[in-house]
Length: 403
Length: 179
Image (cartoon, rainbow over all chains, first blue to last red; front, top):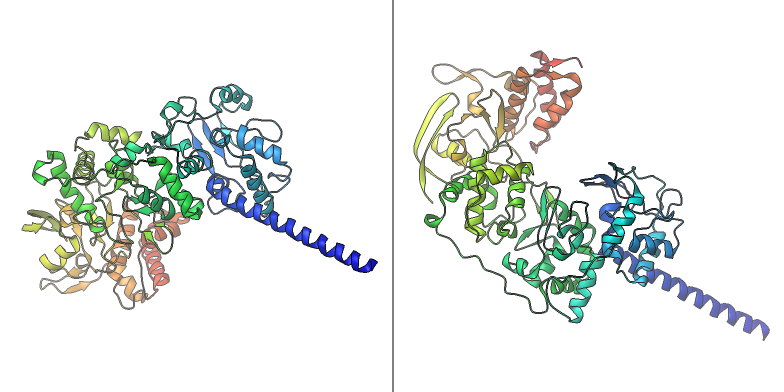
């Protein structure tokens, strides 16, 4: 009889142990999803490097900051961090030794992360392979290399203010707010920064310039002006492409590391948050007769036919799996021509998207066309498919080239 | 769509064509208006580089330009060389001597079906001529060949022989310096 009881006790113990392990696995799995949503990988993985082992250079006006090793390695990673210490790093920008992290770590957005979500991310990171490798040392100029100087910065700017891009209060909108503002930390790039690198919170999500390119405004009225609808935004996040064009520059890795892995409900919630519970109607661009265009745009059409139409089509229709359409493309619809000019000058590397979708490399035209030709071409693109005036001057173009 | 006049220099000869559609690809202009059919249409989307021609720049340098994705009017006023412009011809227009690159490609059996050969000849010629203006260091040689030919596609996989032939020509012409 005693043996029966002891066997029974063992069996019950095993069931509990198994249940606990299963619960741990569930937490780890949820942590993996949340780490995707928070896009930890983008900065904490070097190009071609081991996942989360750090080393990606992040260039700032103050110097180069390197993403750190956040694998559970005890020497170079976060293997010795407790849940509390991890939470402090995530939400307060505090390292285990008490030093301040540079705000390239978006603790200014993560500070509103739910404790259980932070713990799940920590559990996931502790479960991955430890990589015994030091990330390169961050190299900032004086006085930015003195980490204690960040105490004042943190007092002023450490907490983000919630300025909403659009009105709403539905369940989807609230979930979207958490996904966009906290986990997704979209505002870290899509918000202008002041001279000492802090987000201008009263202009939150209204667009910021990053390494010469514009992370465009995500305010509902601006998104609608550029032709975005909620389903298109969700598609764009899921696949890196939509009728409005494809992700490029700093946004390109985001679809690979983060948004393609998110559940449809969360992507839809993000779109709901950005465009609001009552989304404004997406503006439709009216076709413009060639004869009514500015002289610059009329000249620009020939430049377009010479060097763009081979892939983007004479009528801007694009070619599937080769080059995106110009008709309906959101980059042409930004009043600020910065990105259009930069892309024309720099080109875009070959891009791969979800499934077998890909776009061929686009050549850059810096040095191939003179400033007048470039200006004319940009004006044509703006006027033909952007719904914008063809009024860029060669002086403005020259300024954007060096900016 | 509209038509416009096109003037350019083609294989050393000034050419004027009064009526050229404004959206005509250069490759079609060469084939259909000039009967220069040696430039090849491969992918038609700027990847395989079988269609490249040489453009001689005013500063004395030259470069390859893809004609399947570039409009004919891009070449307005420019000096263009096609595969037909490399060999020496007699008065009847028959080839009497190949260019050094062409000759070495033949000797090295660099091409098989030859579809990609015009593009490779033009690209290797650009490399050789730019090296004549600024000789290459030995340490730069392999990188320079890769940068010039690496994006050209050969479905018969003749890459090694193209590379060897190009290396030979650069060496034979004394364009590779120690260093």
